[in-house]
Length: 176
Image 1 (cartoon, rainbow, N blue to C red):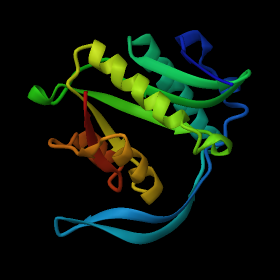
Image 2 (cartoon, rainbow, N blue to C red; image 1 turned 180 degrees about the horizontal axis):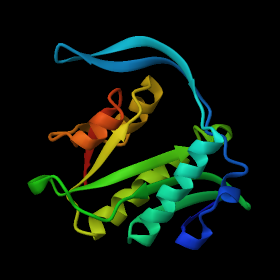
Image 3 (cartoon, rainbow, N blue to C red; image 1 turned 30 degrees about the vertical axis):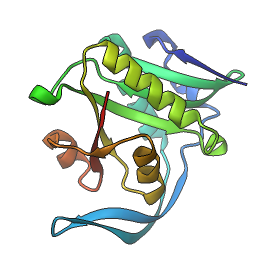
Image 4 (cartoon, one colour; image 1 turned 90 degrees about the horizontal axis):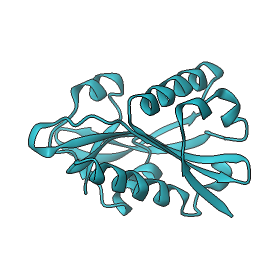
């Protein structure tokens, strides 16, 4: 049985991710060319290095310490999914809050965990006064299908910091 709960800063450490498998085998991605979205062949394997996990832990700890939302799914004692939302609003009248991460362990995908995490992130952001979630999302076809299923669309206003950091990501929003 999957149990969901908010994580506190002091709980977030490298050991928390010992049973988490980030691996994603990507074959096709969405790319914007001449103002149109197209599916392109873009095969690669997305996986995290030890350095990536260290950065992730630091970022999630910072989010929790700054009053943001870090929410997790556990199978027994094993972390199998997580999502994070930053606490500040941006984007003027859009009143965006930034969904900075949402990941489900490879061994648990397709079981509704991502949807539960996303819905919890939406509820938290709505309760904090946001009008929309902003997502700089992996462009893999499967990832984009998830966000479309969750009601996301292309962002009205792009966060240029995200665009410069991840130029191949799709910039999305979801009304709350």
